[in-house]
Length: 128
Image: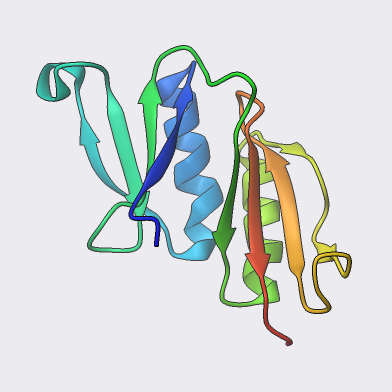
């Protein structure tokens, strides 16, 4: 089981806003923000469902090649809401919400590129 993961972003403030808005429909919140003075390295922000962050962004030179991160959604409606919120927050469409039966019959996902081109997905694996 993965405890936490993250991506490096080139515009920390822009990406912090993007993830705060895009992940809200999935129940994620900005739970922790630490400055470079606190970490001894760089600014970081942790998102997750309370009380623990499990997705982190950090200020720096964005990962290359870009990273793919998929967030589990509890419903197809949550996938749809993620997609709309991510686009409204400045993301770029990389695959509208819909079934992806080549993965499995109930794979319902949506894909958006974040400001650095990371492929961010919300996916629901259950039938409606």
